[in-house]
Image (cartoon, rainbow, N blue to C red; front, side):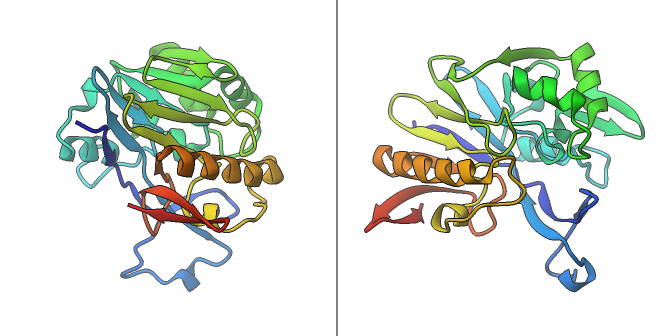
Length: 257
């Protein structure tokens, strides 16, 4: 059986200079009412490996009308129990990727995945406590430090026989990407170095990256590897598609199913 991948769509949002994520429904909301805003999708991924259930990044941690985590609701819709998640792999700790590590309801925090090990780059963890940007929510990290099973990794390497990681920097100084493989199929999660398929096709330097030029160069590198090795790429902020394989023809990347 090929690796099972489930897209856990948390919603569409507008984000302005205050870094506040406001739900945006294109069917009823007008983007002109959200001046100077970015519009993004947020979707963590659940991957079923042979002997483990893996969550990759955790979204914003927003709740549904019943007060349940949207993330938990989506995991259950995929046929799994959130308590059965074994590993939570974190590309970096910006709020739109890390908010769902906890369930914050009316000021009371609980671990979203009490039986999981949260895997984080040590440099990203340390930087998150000292960074003054509103993209980091230190109250979440304080709670994790006291209550969660944390595993800090450094540089690039292998977590298990099926999971490897690469320290990329570029988006944040200690951003990382993940490869998950069962020996036949390989999944690539590029985090915010490769958040949308369009960013592979268009060559540009983004102002929101710590090192935009390096991020652009990494997208080219990962695109080449994805095409050569038939990776299934997962796009955390993808709008047109959330997963896809990369082909390369005459120097041009194309994303297919």
